[in-house]
Image (cartoon, rainbow, N blue to C red; front, side):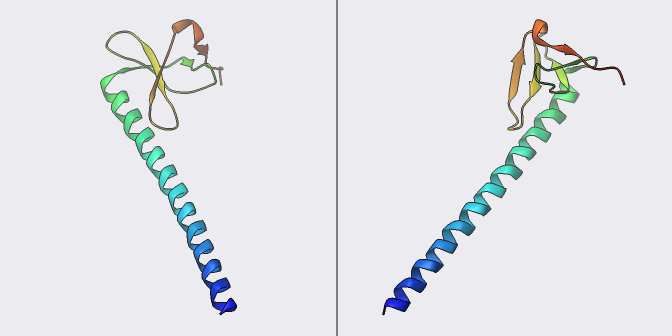
Length: 92
């Protein structure tokens, strides 16, 4: 009886671990899909600011129809930034 209880606990623990790994991978794939989709739409609809990057090096920077500057974060959300906070891209 003890062996059966221990075996059930081990199986339940491995199932929870496997489910957490699947959830983590699914979340990463969803975030990357959202980021790619938003960047693609922004590249078509809005203007790309070619010689600037975000405050922490984010690229590309877009200019929307209201002349506001933004970049797309890793979760696919638009993050608006002031023109003063943008940095020049390094020359290659």
